[in-house]
Image (tube, rainbow, N blue to C red; front, side, top):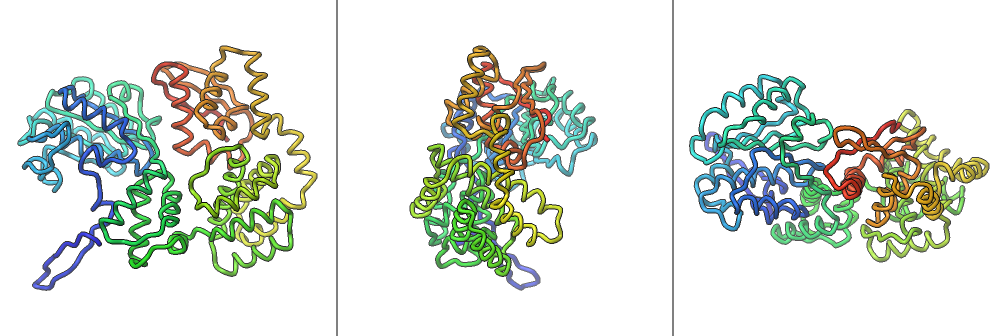
Length: 486
């Protein structure tokens, strides 16, 4: 099941395991999951001998940035390229995989972020490679470099030697100076889809002789939130716990995710305002020792999925029987009620962070949502300004269109709507969208933003969706910045 390595210490044999995410790390561009738009372009550059001197790989954690950088470093130096792919068998490739090729340097900027670290690189680049064709420098988490280090790196990027290639990787490209960005070929890595994660996990399980239920695979892919490395790490933990048959319950127990039955029952009780049942289930959850914060966050996500069903959006992270139960709740609820509950649950989550009596706050907070009809009425009356249901938001957009047919905001919202990003679209209705200097587009928020909306806007998936819409509208590569998001 695992790759086993044998060590000898004073004649005593010792076994060590290689983690799954290392054992199944991609070694060819074709192995990289969900980033075909990037790997195809890079392979064509290698085939046509048009490799750049500096690359920037940006995207969320576990999306394949570092793996792709390692593959690229081997490919440009491989002695027996095969259709733009490294052979992984020649001496150069083997030494690179083993980490013994000194012409390929990997640096973690999180712990090596000073001027001296970059100055060392500046001195090294003047020397020709010892064995390979190129000296390749992979700088991970490059946004962590200090200002002085960025300035030192810039001088090298401005006039790099022909035998040097830089590959910069970051989860936060907005923190890089524009002078650095402008000198790199930028590739944005997408969040990996749940379907792609499930396919990869199935392959790993087959190769490792592991039995796993389909629902367990879906649960892991949902928890990974677009990060392949996280998904494989969760699978690794599950295999260590139960290598006979991994079920959905095994995944839930190990990751602390509440049972679906608890979540669906609580969702229904809140929307039905059944206080007696809410108290009973709350006490059961607390007595069972479940993490209330995790339960509340999962409850918010389930309510969000119910709202998506009300908006006729596809939901893929549930089994068929689970989806049927969600649909049943959605059918007997209104969008206004669900949106109200999501807002109040988000407020409850914020309160719990600062309380030492989380169980009490959790229980009373759920009861308050059911009892506070006056607040709900007030919330509904002001929703025209801040929390309108999706249909009403669409009407407001139509009004906005009539007022400003050529406005950047209208074009961006329209593009989001065309792309099926209804939730993202709804979060930007009451913002201003303006283009500033240096190809920077500002999304300006007016007033307080609730915790759930803020969490949604900070997701990599949301940022990518907004940026793709803005770039499509502007017709050029731009950066997007949130202003006054508080």
